[in-house]
Amino acid sequence: MKYTITDHVKISDTESKHKLKWLRAVERRSNTWLENSPVCTKIVDIDFNLQYMSKAGIKALSISDITTFYGKPYPLEFFPSSFRDQMTKTIECVRDTRKILTHEAAIVNLDGDEVWFHSTIVPVYDEECQLEYFMIVSIETTERKSAEIKLHKMNVELESLVENRTKELEQANKQLKISCETDFLTKLPNRRSYERRLCENIATAKRNKTYLSLLMIDIDNFKEYNDTYGHAFGDSVLCQVSRSIRNSLQRSTDLVSRFGGEEFVVLLPDTDATSAFIIAEKIRKNIKALGLKHSQSGNGMITVSIGIEALKRHKLNKDDLLNNSDNALYSAKGSGKNCSYIYAG
Image (tube, rainbow, N blue to C red; front, top):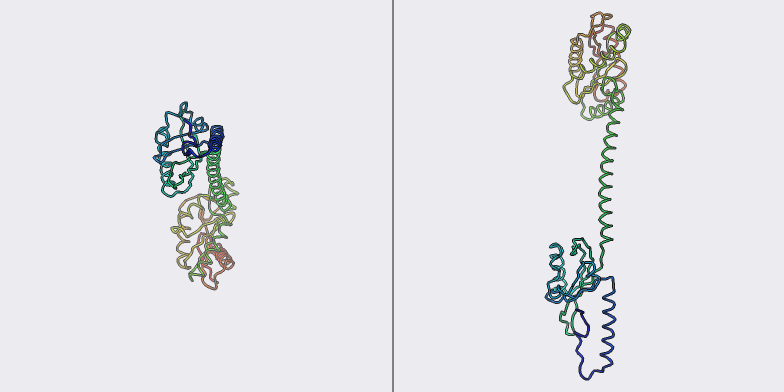
């Protein structure tokens, strides 16, 4: 079935044969263009029944005999329901608004292959401005759409890859930061970590007008221990002492760091000298209770000496806090070791 112009043109007896011949020539040229154009053209009547489809659409849909579908509802029955529903709504909107609208979606041909079309739905009116039929002009976009879908999939995969790599990088950076601020032997925060936390705690203490205490801890006669038992046993003692100090602290805000060699420091936020002394004594007694043998020590076992300083407000600064606790440590050493000593000024 061919949809012809002269089907809808009434020629009166008085009109010239020349005009009719001209119209039929235009019709032939139009049909030639429609049948050979890569653009699929369809004619749908006002009841949404298919009246014509050009060869481009017939080929794309793998239809052997299009005439069996003429006079039947469009969209065709073998199209996916999602396509049929949306296309029907679009045609209804064209009918109701008298506007030209576009629609792009995938259909499935008779071979089961997905085919994409970008369609323009045009309402056609007669001389009295009454809707006569719909012309649907469709361009197959399967290749472009497949490329878009492939590109979108690649972008999603790339975004996922970037996201995963970013997370891995963040985790690596986090682990690197931890490694940079962790003592490799005792697994305690190292001096670098202590310096950072010290500045943070000083700022907080000044803002809250509270004390900040520092304990300087040194293992007594540790050089003699290494000389007697060897560095492997010395490393074991450092690890056991560090665990004991850490386990003696009950607040998450307290920080123990390996300061260097056999020295450790403990930061005690919001803690005055009296409270700091109680914590220091707990640490000292817990380490002594480990019962680590040390023949070159006066007690016959591993012990520690602890210097204590507590400062607040305008007197609080990192140099005095460290130097004063270090001086207190020397006083503890001079008092026979295995004791805790508060800086006296």
